[in-house]
Length: 327
Image (cartoon, rainbow, N blue to C red; front, side, top):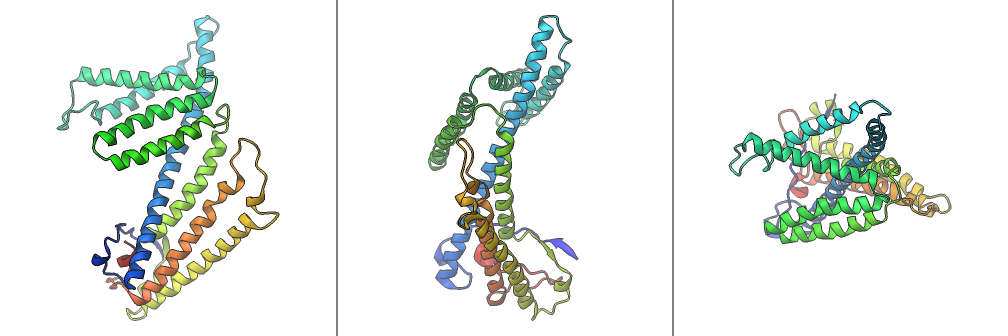
């Protein structure tokens, strides 16, 4: 029987004096390292998802915008029919933005009650106009880098200002540094928008493998559970350790193969030539060995903890191991 583990809550290991896990100071240090790696993975995966959504949305918007612009100009000149697709998109965006306004401070007061209908309709109209205004820039601006610079400022400026106003100066400072990186990336994007698909695949690889590593940390991966249900409680820790070692061995084999794929002299992606303006091949697949290294380490740690610090078995024999240290 295959089933998914119940995901555990990831918490900070806390100060050394409050640490109750095994292996003393070494265990506490490893728990903090694992916790830090998890948070870096989470930040990178979320950033990759956000950037992928933005660049794909803009690419689709640009492709449709150019087509609708041509059809609209033909309709104005009396050479073509009314561009009904533009009206459909306008209606869809209006409904979507109306929902956003109704569930945000634009449409609700601080106590959660809705604002007057006229205020909500006016706010929706302004938001829709802003969306179409920003979207039209992708069609009319000559360089896509200019568009991304404007978009980065419009998004990140208010976000940084919000956290600074809330007194979260460290968060605001980190977001400010991220804004500088995004501005640099925006200024160096290739001309046009056709590169979006290739960049999205690159981000998808990173997001997928980092997500797999995070799933290992959360103990939410798929497992074969039928044998564990019939294990005697005294044998269960050793069975858990053996199963974790088998998985760790498999991921270590994949890690070795990914290392050869990356760094084998002459044929590895590390040595591949990169065309100007393209993402280096090694950067596109670096997520694979990094994620496999993290997954292997977590399964090895779980195998050790299954023996030296077994969790109490539940009525079904399902006992996630080692979370006392890692969370």
